[in-house]
Every structure is written in C-alpha cells, then in structure tokens.
Length: 113
Length: 111
Image 1 (cartoon, one colour):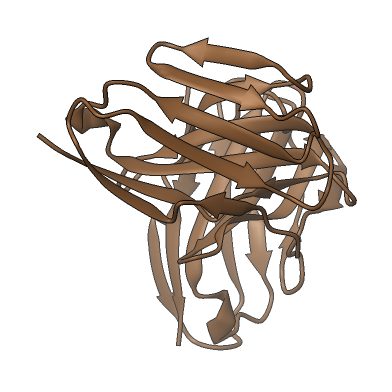
Image 2 (tube, chains in turn green, blue; image 1 turned 30 degrees about the vertical axis):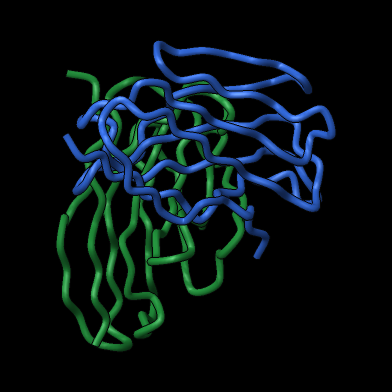
C-alpha cells in the first residue's frame, strides 16, 4: 500500500531534550516536506527536499533540522525543543514538486513541557 | 511568515446547501491548491489550479484561480454530511516562492 508513515504518532518530552521524528514514503517520490499545524494558523512549511541531499528552508525553519540521505526517508530533528514547538507535525511527499499532489502522513502530535 | 487570508473561518450549514469559500493574498501566486482535512488525518488534495482564470471541477467541487492571481475560490454544491472537515487553500509562488497555506475553513454539515 502506497503511504507516508511517521513515527512516533504522539510524543511528550521536556525542553532541551533532542528528538527525531521519522518520515518514510514507499512511493519513490522525489519531493518530501515537513509542516507544522497550529490552531488558527493552518499549516506552515518547515523544510522541504527536492531530492536526495537537497534540502531547503520553508516558511518556519528556526529550531529544526532535516536530512535526506536516502530517497525514502526525511527525518525531522529538534536539537533543543522548546514549548513553542508544541504542535501537530505532518510529513508529505510528491513526485516532483510541492505543486504536485502531496501525500500526507498521519501526523505526529508533539508536546514539549 | 506569510499567510493567506481565508474566509469564512467556519460554516455551519444544512445538508443540500451550496458552500463558498475564498482565499486572498497581497502576493501573486503561480499555483493555487485546495485541500481537505478530516479529523485525525493529514490533508488531501482536492483541486489544483495552474493558470489565472482557470476554472476546474472535481465532482461537486469547483475552484477558480482569480484573474489577478491574488485570490482563489472553492464552491461545493449540494453539500452532504461527508463534506465535513477543514478546507485549506494553498498558494505557491509569491514573494518567497514557498508553499503558503491559508488558515482553513471549518465546514459542518447538519443532516
């Protein structure tokens, strides 16, 4: 089944404790992206990747890192999480660009205390 | 960061009614996208618009790319209960050439 998977689905952590949210897609998509969703603000793009080893900042990249060592995986790294990073995070992938149909993962709800 | 102005914020309607929502921006976009998000899930693309003035339908959904390239509209005809969800517009291009989402329109349909 074609899908985007994210792990973990729920995470509660404390300020400053490094964490990684994994994202994997099995559709051989070139484009992958991370978004955060907050009430009243909609989705905001954090980082995106056009292909392996090619990443670029989205609208709200501060406090986040990403890597794209393999085509299928695009982990989101929070080196020192803070409470303002409490949010619902979505990973997405598409064939070629963000204008193509993006397939979203199920979301990761992160709480930073 | 940039945001799109999406309205209305929420709509509570009766089954069978038509629905209209829109997004406006101070920036010009090259592509407009409309997504629907159901509770507990990620957004799903409904319609993509690539040219100013373009009018595209997907079943009971119709969307238009505004002539000024600064706005887009989504209409849903004869709403049904499964139309419930949050509808997001998204614009690609603009001043930063990033994908910018609207704040969403919550749609509730009463049977």
